[in-house]
Image (cartoon, rainbow, N blue to C red; front, side):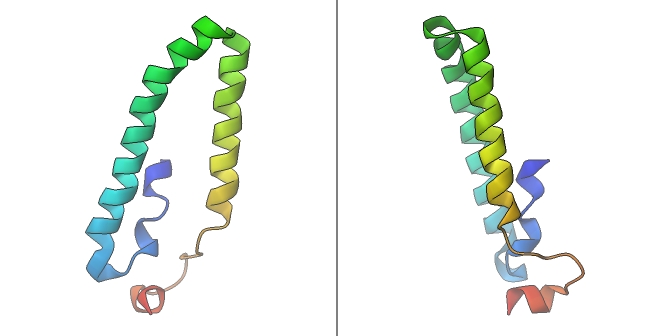
Length: 80
């Protein structure tokens, strides 16, 4: 769900590139997490590893709150 958050934040003429960029970053993050989590569990602990996931999710949520507001706005107003 997170990767669709900023689709309307891009101007209509750049929307596909903007969406591809944010979607690609999300996929890279998912791949990095899948590789990094087993190493983190093995070296530290299961509880610490999942606290780390919770903290990074919380940081992402806080950052998303500071994004541009696009609801109830026309595409022309967003791209201006």
